[in-house]
Length: 216
Image (cartoon, one colour):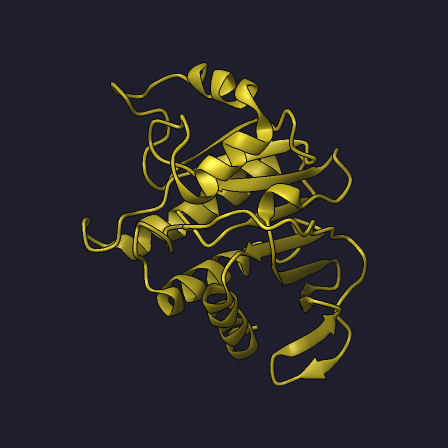
């Protein structure tokens, strides 16, 4: 999960599309947001900010929570999302069936709940790997992104925002994680109107931007 404290700046999306050709294909910087064209109908946006304040319309938008397998809150972005959503989120997570004792969402899988006091409509909970503690962490991290996108698509989400999964206390190197994340997004080129990465730290933002400029 991305280790973060909370910024006071709200991040509001859904304003424009990429439209400038560059070495990264279609790319444009709009204010503080870097936009990359995924397809004629879909945009990838990178921004620095507080994911708990991000929203588009409160109806077809969702944020992704870098959760743990218990889904009952934790540190970093997980704790921030639970605090911002209010106690109803923890209650909803308790109601997610355990697949084995103490595990509601195994690493690499995804679950969805209402967002309660958050401005978005849904929270998608996924669990990234602890780097260095498991075999083939790249497979599990990719699965976390892919399964989050599949759950979003199944629930008619048009706008989705991710943090940097596994890049905080789970110690995943930023450059490796950004390549996995963006390659996973590229497998859904027309399934969402906008896919966002809302990144708290300068270092994670820089890694994601460098990867997008290279591979988009």
